[in-house]
Image (tube, rainbow, N blue to C red; front, top):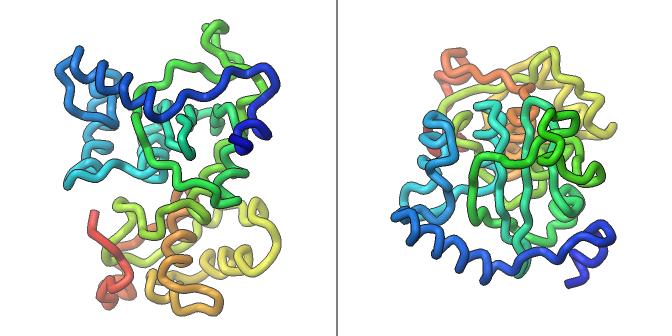
Length: 251
């Protein structure tokens, strides 16, 4: 598969096939009496587990943006196994260190929109960040990359085009004054972020701005939220007067 031939560091083992990984999960589930295919229940802390299980209700699995948002919100390192083509892509996120570990440049894959990256399994991270005392659990240095650009790319270009549940519903949004808008390349998007520093806007408002629609507005708000730069108000008069037509499902 050319995608992995071009992005895997030289000498790294080939990524596991999805079919083999699914058999592994099935064997593990039978051995533990656990029917959850996407979450290793025993390895997660209770509050994070409860958060993740919400996404599996109704028979659907969590999407990668929901999982990473939960990791950031709970400040817990997670190992997330993603389907990328016919291979399994292991991603470990370290929200406190703002790092991600992956054998490929996942940001480049997301920005190229080469795969939807369904979540196959979530568990507590085994890998450790650089500098950890357990040096035998620290991965290869070249596989660690900054987390913030990856979160930004997943929000703007990933499969999800709806607001994350924590920020959906009747609300208006602002960009925190502490958010560094220069992290975003100069252009219309940065100007929108500057505007949102000084005024509140509902999702309906943002969707009506030039160059935006419902999908793009939701992606932008998600991206700001994942960078800890979003202020959400549900009691502001502008929020109370909005019908949340663009708000998605409530929290």
